[in-house]
Length: 468
Image 1 (cartoon, rainbow, N blue to C red):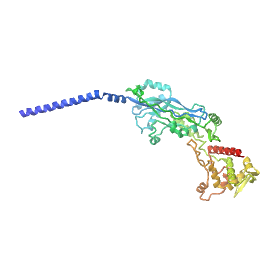
Image 2: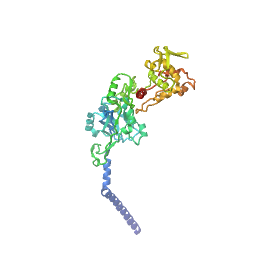
Image 3: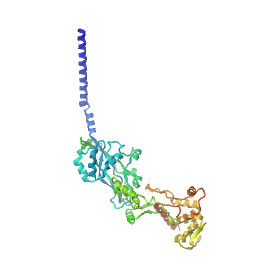
Image 4: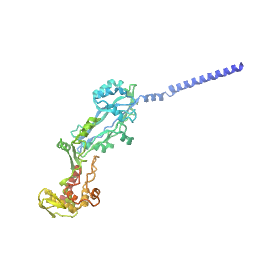
């Protein structure tokens, strides 16, 4: 009996002590959390209601050589969706408000589904104020939807310059993987033209603003009075060699036409005007480009997206005769007294190469003035393929000019190696060389290369005039 009572007393004391200890621990934790650690938990609570808003940096402005604006920036509203908070039942309403086709929002969300669902996706840029007003009235019923004020390109300065300026667009997931340390999902990146070449200095640095939001994600104030906010830093401006007035005249001349124009200042090599026609409207790329616009541009038989000034290649024709003449004179193969009799063409092997007229006896000067094919058919044979190709290369043919527009073709400059590959080593017909003398055959150049060639010839003429 006593042992049993003794055991019962011991057990009761142990249980009583355990209860006292448990209560003490709970009391201590409550005291610690509510009194001692209250500032830290308060800060943590604030952070849970803090929303970071990233601000895109305005891209650098393009100026012409006289500091006239060519491409600028303007503010615009961008509507976004954060997938983690978004209710897909809202999609039909949003698409109706935005006036976009059914499935538009789902397509954008699916394109970026591999990225974190907590990162906002841009679904509409340059949204009109009526949509923003509607959002403000209904924001509490639109979880995961918000908007930010960003800048977009402004092309309202009187010229187009589509193939020269190029455009920027939202970075692709593939490119984002390569440049994750520099860009985030939704960032714009230069995609073509000057926008692409100078992307690193044009894009500037993003800013960030921290705001306090309530349970409905509605902004209720700044976080820490904006002490931790960082302002966006605008990208560097570019002063181009383009003359705005010359560019406008060139674009007007090519309106409703196909072709290309490159105007160069010979003394410096600066490009004063640059046109590829037909052009496309860069304003269509300042916002989210619709499939309708994209398909229309790509299906257009006139290929408005193709940069004819740097990518198209043509036979230069008689413009190339001056190069043959210069090479022959420079190498001492002929002099100004060398003459050829033109009877309306030139017989080479079993083929007769025609001339435009019967010019009679002509020297190099008369041959250029009258564009006598017969003279240059024979002259190029005297020069030989290797020397002819060497001089052609010196004038920039057969290689890229390294103009600051990345979309460029090197053209085709046929050489011995070129023909050996096409026909076999030393098995190519020598009659091929005859056509090269008048800028025909396999020789192909871009409008830009031809403009540079003409500028170089003019410089050489001016130098010759000064020394004579």
